[in-house]
Structures are given as C-alpha cells and as structure tokens.
Length: 331
Image (cartoon, rainbow, N blue to C red; front, side, top):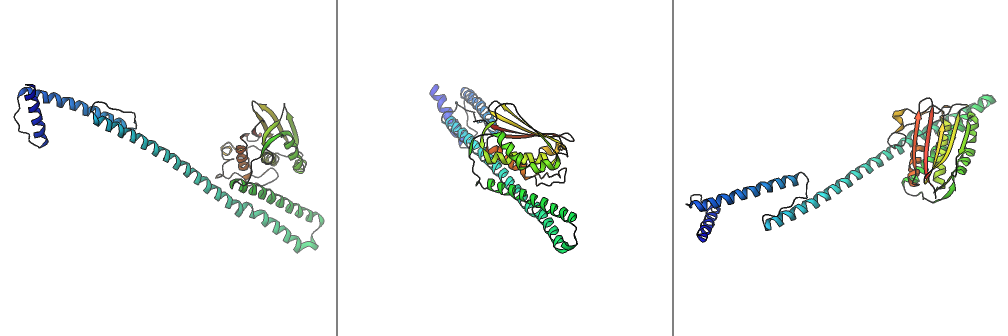
C-alpha cells in the first residue's frame, strides 16, 4: 500500500512537472498530496517572511527546513550582509571625502578672498598716503605729516599681522609646520606676548589683570601656543574700549590647564559665535579704534589647539564683553 501510494505520488509529481493536470488518483494519495502542498505552502510563507526581513536590512535570518536549499539560502544571506556592510563603509568614505572637498573648496575661496581684498586694501592705503606725501611734501605742516605717517604705520602693521597669519595658516595646511611639544610655563608665554603688545595696551590705557591659581605648566608646542595667545590677546585689545580691562585667569582642571582671556569690550552677536572658527564663514568686525582683521586668526587658533590636543571655546554677551577659553594638557 505504501509502495503504491509512493508510486502514485511520484507519477503525479512527474505529470505536474510535465504540465499534465488530468491524472486520476485515489483519495488517500490525494490526501497525502494536499497535506504535502499545505506543508510546502507553510514553508514558502515562512521563507517569504524571512526574505522580507532581509529586504528590510535584517541579515541575521537563517533557515533549517529545506535541506540543501537552507544552506544555499543562509550562504546568500551572509553574502548579502557582507555586501551591505561594504556598501555602508563606502558610503561613509564618500561622505567623508565630500566633506573634505567642501572644506578644501572653502579654504581656497577664503585664501583668494584674503589676497584680493584684505591684503590689497592696506597696500592701497599705504601707496595712497605715500604718494600724497611725495606730491605735497613742501606744503604739509608737521602735525598733518605726523598724522599721515601714523596712518601708514597702522596700515603696515595690519599688513604684517595678516601676512604672518597667512603664512602660518599656509604652512599648517601643507603640513610643513612641525609639532614639537615640551613642558613650559604658560604664564611666561602670556607675559612675553603682553610685552610685545604693550604699545597697543598703553595706547588704549587698558588695565591688565593676570591671576594664577596654582601651577601653570603645560605640555605643548611653544610657538603654536604663543601664536594662539597672541591672537587672543590682540582680539581682546582690539574690542576693548579705552580705559577698559582685560582679565587673564589660569587654573588647573584635572590633567589640563585652563586659560581664560576675558575683556569687557563690545561682545559678539550670539548668531556669530558658531561662525568664528569656520573657514567658510567670514566674521570680521572693526575694533573700538577701527582696527581691522581678516577673521583668520581664530581659525589658526582652532587648528593649533587641535594639534596640541587642547580645546578652544568662547562665551560672549553684547555690550558686556567676551571670554575665550583654551585648554592645554599638562605634562
């Protein structure tokens, strides 16, 4: 009976495979086939569900109910999972490359902007003032001559400061600037730069307060940190009113030295604070004595702080002043 049922079922399977749907079969064989088809339908439904899960990104689906097909299905799932992970990795690389290209493009635009505008204008002023002196030398009184020479001096100073920052920035971008860290006292760097900027401080009659709570030794590149300090002090002087005050506070926080340079000057608009360190956003405001800047100094500060495993941040309020904070590691 079993052999007969088996033969009937086999014949039916062959007939169905050949497209013959008119084969006569007994009730028992028919019942067996129906059960088999129901079982197959259940398997196919489960297989469909598994496939849908894979399509939704769940590559942890396995099957173990159709013999060799299960092995092939599971192998295919593993290959899909591997391919998906590779595509995700390639997408991340593409996004990273796109971001780098955008930064390079923004850097190029800022570079040409500085050369065509910020660098050109001071030279135009210097040439204009010099030509005026040459053409009218015998007719200019000493007071007027002194004023013109002061204007030439200010323009020359602006050009020198801009060129210094521009060269530093270019060297840093091309990787020529070497990082050479060692241990030194940050207080000495601050005092050294205050001496360099003393004329500007005296001219505006600014009061400087330097407070050191405890030790102030950092482990960093001396020249890079000195450039950061000089830029931040120059900004504080630029935006502080005559007879104003600049506070410099040095504290230790865990394994870092925190330096705050705080002025009581004009302050920064809240919407501009996030743009200060962005290469593609130009924020340049005249100082309280009409001092000009290119906005490049703070970008250099950010780059140098990152190289020295430190941080830079800012807090400001219009009309009340600005605080710049830098964090540097101790030895």
